[in-house]
Length: 375
Image (cartoon, rainbow, N blue to C red):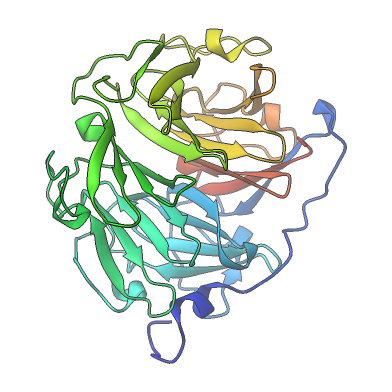
């Protein structure tokens, strides 16, 4: 990609293929299965070349954010190396599309593979297949253009701070941002966790402002207006097509629904206390331990929540409000694959859902896992 100007960034990453061939099985707990789809369990990196290496035989290093992108391929970022990787789900081949393995902040670059990215936590694609990377340690959100591969800075100036509301996002300051998502109108939401704020970058103007949060480390009430309400550790966010956002509070140990148009914040899961309780009952009464990831699933109208310090993935059915565990047993470890409820994980961080399969970055096991049979 970086060696020729004739190939666009999009063409170099979007190899169209069918979904990875994990069996689709009946919706019964005893038939749930988890499989490793990338990583060997040992942190590392092997140069894979243009054609890629077999993903389950290739090391990865502390994977965090994970999403489906162009060509229905799976993409994830590695927080320790700064690389963004692509897993072709039809061939099970793994390649690198951005990052040189070094840390640092470069405001602009024309070669994604030769660019350093500083502790990326999440990645997202927009409708034009531009890639967005949120960098915790560079306090910024970067953009890689689909056609040219040009790397630019969308938000944050590279230094930690809390300023810039009402101005162009590129002139603003963020403080250890962790998560990004697009709302139903294409605006970019940013979990500015170091500032305990949820920021929004308007699609049409590029202006940034605070959507919610005051900078105080205070647990919000169960329901409140967005503006002027504190947020305690806004760590991760995802959205649905109906204009709702779902916000994970890491220190707050809770999940809130964010109604952007209605200007309301509503607690929907977690009591705010630290623990691992509540499976089989209403999510509003359950407890979490440092949750760090979330994904909305249209296929079963559920939220998949990464309960990181409990080392489990939990599912909240939005139709009923009931929560249960779908991966992990509460113990820290590495596997084994097979029964998801007997598979230990090690501080997972990322989750996404595609064609009935739940993909999880089992971060400190240095694996990407896939759960089938849930839907």
